Image 1: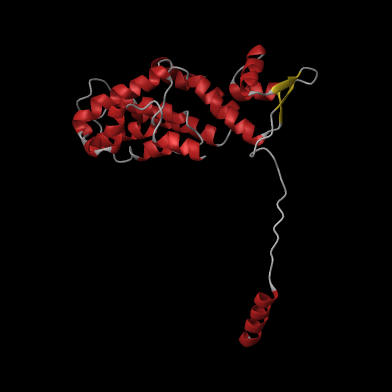
Image 2: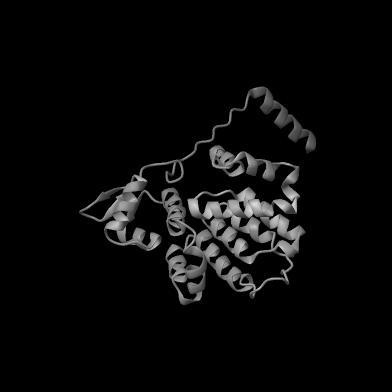
Length: 244
């Protein structure tokens, strides 16, 4: 957990320039928004992720509504989805509550339409309703999102599958291949290939994958033993007598 937190605060792929923009006094300088937006699109293309840098963009939009770019916001939210169950998505949305729409946009703002759809996807992930996530993701309602945004976000679907894998590792010691396939939206040999990369072994006779033990999927009884010394017991009894 400590390693994950450190990586979240300062990803190893973050450059010194971005570090200075995120952590330094220039964080609220609107002239730097272009640099941060370019960095976001680098994340989109390279499968990297830097939540704090993306939050800095949204904060600049809050203070400078004329800079607002809905396409940037949607891409930030897509990247945040891939960090579930961490609270990145909600952190991003919280900075949009009081946003002002940029009146200088050449086209209608797509965010009011797409934000509820992204929120639904996030709810499915948070609730571990993975088949429902994929069904909704592939639905006609999200055709515009897929064709205009996720298609540009390299590795988006694989990143979601990694979210699923983390949940499966924390919950199961054994899982049927059909069930796993419905969770990760894959079938046949693709399921086996995915599970193999996770280090899960398949029993071909039963079609069940075995998931190695880890601190989250092991149920262990905890014995709590309290040692009370005689002088302490005397004080307790004495106090109870005085109360009476």
